[in-house]
Length: 118
Length: 133
Image: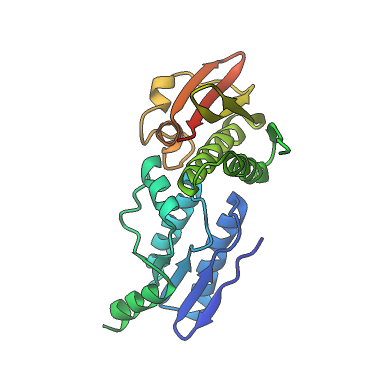
């Protein structure tokens, strides 16, 4: 299953609305990097509002895509992590210290604008 | 309530199937959102271990209904190569697959009961229980 990536000015917006299997997660990683390359986007918001489970594999893919996008010069913010998902991740032992996050899409865009446009 | 007790793990997508079924059982039993997420995540880790290390196996569910407590038991079973050093895989950050190494110790923290049996001939069996509060 392909996850749609929307372009809005200099930003890319993604809302993950499917139960991510490993293959879709990897595919998404590749699609996003290609889209950053093609569009020249400087900021990315990945919204996880509809995601009700993040296991260690998906966490790794998300953490990696943030780092990979950073290498290409694009800043990624993860938004909308559900309370149950946040609790589960920490209990699982996954802290995602270096991953920028925001409460929701709106806050994520504000955060990007502050960081990218000063 | 139709209760499907087992999922066979054979392909990668079965990991998703197993955790979705586990979440459904947990919800029907009356677990709250956070416990549903804990249970689904634990199943995802167990199913992925089967897929990565043994190729095939099963995840089975059992409702425990005792006088004083109720819970959901998950049994993950495979006929894979077994785990040579259990204490090693129960250490945080240990991984042979290039993952985050959160797997089994993480599952133990997410669940209330956790037991692992493994040998090189019979494979690995992990039992985990979440009690309904």
